[in-house]
Length: 74
Image (cartoon, rainbow, N blue to C red; front, side, top):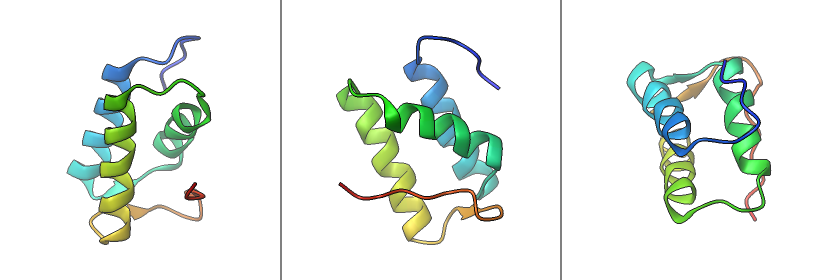
């Protein structure tokens, strides 16, 4: 999907917006979001986007497709 060695905040925003718009989290989008989660230097904006995604999933607004999404709250 987004093959870049540097994680881009605009890409993360796009991924979160796509998941919210479609109401589902595809395996490819979940994999890319996992790359962001693995980053040790998330900006405040990136952290906010991930929190929005987590809330939308918890509220049932976004349905993970298959068993692809696992997030351990820290």
